[in-house]
Length: 255
Image 1 (cartoon, rainbow, N blue to C red):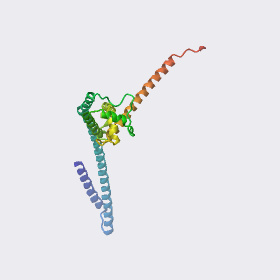
Image 2 (image 1 turned 60 degrees about the vertical axis):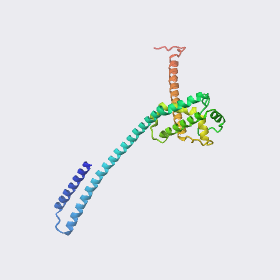
Image 3 (image 1 turned 120 degrees about the horizontal axis):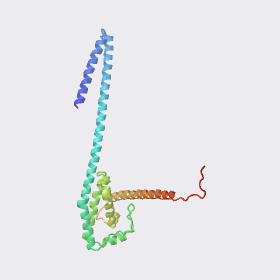
Image 4 (image 1 turned 45 degrees about the vertical axis):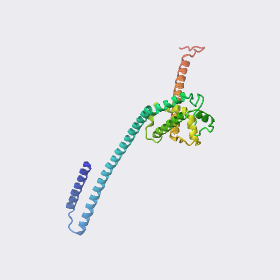
């Protein structure tokens, strides 16, 4: 701000000096000469004002660029911090709640819904809820309430990432496998609640959206690792093949 004021004062002083110098140089003696002098002085003042405005405009654009960069940097930093806080929430609150659910299911001798050959499918969801309802009916009321509480916590947790508040890269590596496992464990409950037939809970849109995004990302990473492994094995096989070639029947005879 002080620099801008100093620059403005310098331009103003220079303008006054140039106006005086112009008037002294032209030294009008009559009316037409005076108007010519006034026109020349006005042109000089306009040129100086234009230069001054251009300088201030450039300084303003530079300040806007710096401010924008600071805003972006601050937003990225806050998103990473929010992601770290979500990791702490998982460790301190959600994992213990999931442990309570599994302990309650173990006491009731109820196994998880999904078997090894089953696949989680959303959008479109499975329409046949017979097996899901049969599994839910096995649960004690306390266990069902714990599952609903856990899914609600996961839904609220997922909003931070689906709405861009938290940095997903901060939490993806440690949490994505856990999230995939939890959705599989309580897949029957999600199918029932998302069908709309039971109004005891919402449809968990953010949890399902984050699950689909992170599952697709994990699958892509796995395919990339497999591709690299196969490419490496192919190169090794080609090298062994080149080394194991048998000599030709007719030897090369040089001069």
